[in-house]
Image (cartoon, rainbow, N blue to C red; front, side):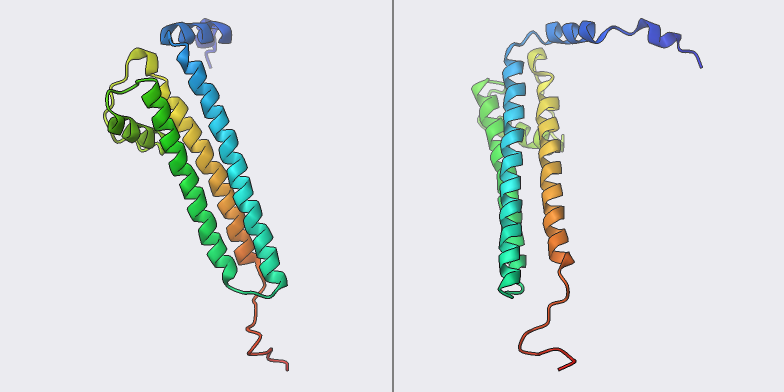
Length: 174
């Protein structure tokens, strides 16, 4: 194998400097910090939702209240979906504040498509915002991954319960 093709690669600092100069946009660092903060807030929110679900589930199991944990699971799902919608709106507001697009609806659709990585629309971005879709979609991928892990944990709790008998029926050995 010929490894000479790797001899012409730039150093990381050179590559980083070239990309930074190409963007020519100091606001992008603000966007990166905002993405990190949104992911941190999302992580705390999802942990809180999942922790509350697990605490409610233990409480209901101790009191032998069966079936209500499914309701709390679906409420947790709605809260997690709501948190994603809030993040899309936050991205839209951030893009509106930075005047990335001329209209607010276009900005909202762009934020939603990038966050969910649908990529359906045909958006023309100026050179200074070319990296914006990467940042938004990166934050969306990680946020959805955190949510998926929490929902998997909650579903595992639901499915991991031993078969509960209806107390009115009694057990077959009575």
